[in-house]
Image (cartoon, rainbow, N blue to C red; front, side, top):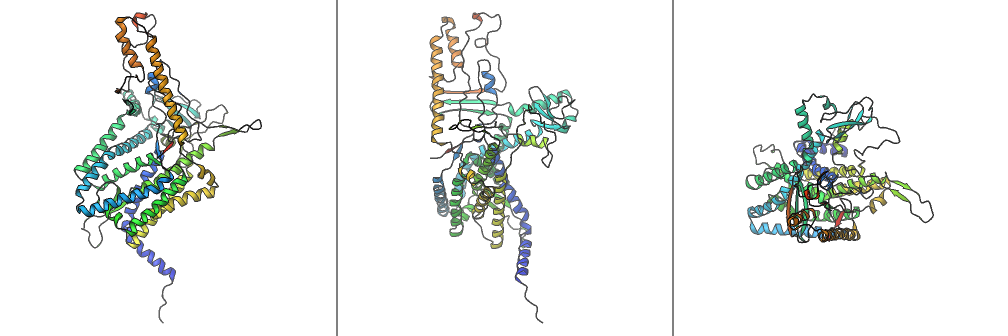
Length: 594
């Protein structure tokens, strides 16, 4: 009797088992690829967080003559960041420009035949941005590592401690604070029990304050630019790593791990600079690039040819194991373009910022209108920057998320700043991205042909985000969410800055008219006034370097002490603070591109 042919299910299972056995040597490579793709997306999306419109603006800081210098040296809770907002027009222009650039590179390679010269030119071009990108990535990684060892809060013995770096102690503020004394150790949690000699303890406290000890560089060029840059030890180390990476990559060798480091830096920086401003715009841009990727991979050889010919950091590379039939053959690499990370990543970052928007929206207090015709009153919660909060959570919560201290229920107790917030849409978009990557790798393995990753990534990311909103009944909220500050708001900011500058100029002119001193002191007084005024009218170019410590003031500008006569000091100056604080829009608002 003849044996029956295996059924459809048996054939399918046999096919799956065969393909799995063929792909098993590549599983570590694919795992490496997925983790490497998620790293810049996860870190870049969190680095792009800023105050949403549902949180209250920080109160204005009032500067006085006595504390002007001190306030100027203080670090803000959050660095003001401006992101480039993408408009719906970019959905049409981006594929067009990308296609023109790709076709130009393809025909240039065909004409040159040898891509060596083109590789050198492009590597020099990318090297300029690579230094800053890698420096930013390394600096932020050092800051995160430093915050893990030195958190702002930690739990110990059922109590929550707040660390005060200036007083060099940690004070119990919540939980079981009975009979709890301040901790003088600079280390958190169980590490406080380590015996530290006085000299070592002081060294740890100094190391704790080290990232905040930054030099301030100021540059002003009349009608061109006016900027301030703070540089600390971590920044200097990051720049050195960036320079060393670019120099070795361009002058010595181009190993895959340096290519990936530069790719991480580019992706990490791009996710902090670009935003689609709305979910509709982001969906439109990804949909347009979806068809662009399909066309240039399946219907033309341009994409594959350019990717294989150019040895520039525009992709991530992952070493493949040698084939079984040729164990000593030339090494090969799997590749993932940076566009397959950045383009879905800007949508994933938008989803994370939308989660933060919803978190503060649900914490708002709404008071109904008392009289007819009046609008309801909305009290926005105070915004707390999430910089360093992850390390606080690490030292104050268990692995399951349970607080290691008992929160106070007293009405007069001050609520703790949030350690984190729900990230529903962010996690959903990450799941969609991973499923898209798995689909790309699976199809590429079965058909043994390069695949347009956006063919699978775009449906995965967009489908997960929009379906999550549909399941939660928040489609209207998502559709109306925007990060574009609008033209009116930009004009308002510009007019406020101009008004502030005009008032400073007027104040300087008034001081110049009212000041009268002897001829012998006139020269010294002019120097004092020029140092005190924020921006003199005749100033064309200025550059200054400020140390992280205070310098002793000369007698001509020192405050008059008790018992001093007028001859011991020039005059009581009406100085304006060197730091102008204007009621600007929150950091992170996106400026739409023209």
